[in-house]
Length: 234
Image 1 (tube, rainbow, N blue to C red):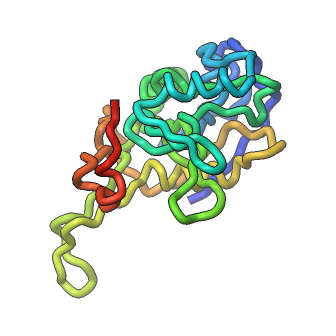
Image 2: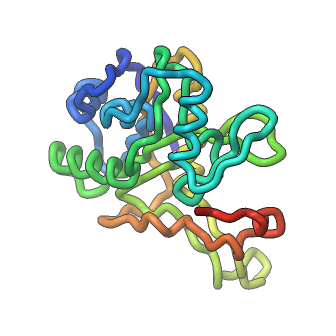
């Protein structure tokens, strides 16, 4: 697998996203996966605020979350069924703005995927909208797929034998977040100005339709349920 980050000019608020992508990218090829940071998708959608005072940010965090609680460093929240810091609202590389997450990252990924498949007459193409996230008891951040299109986001090993014939019962690989993490590592989190990346030869199954619920699991099936059962999500 090969990942190539793409350096671009600075994306402007409310700029048209698809023309920016077309101009910034090389011609996309069959079976590639285009990775797009959620920040430029949100800016294109007008999902930002010019006020950055603490009260405004706290109000936004609560309104964007289904659950929120303050911690030592940031607000811990649940948004779109996933834990994240501050409902994904970001001030880094934002030119003094508060940038929210895209309204619907799966829909945005599908629109980008459809556009480039039609433009370049491709049968198989994937798109991932990424953000960064932190993991419990681990320092630093990794990537996550807020939305994706064109491929299956999970690989299921359940029911298959392992190396020694033991039938696997719960083993599933989160393909979408794994690819997002690898891409975000190459794209960077600082001054790199690389909001895009292209993944080649990814071990994925391309599909015409993507299920936005395939990575979601009920809270009671989560291994962290003993820690979560006191949480009431609105």
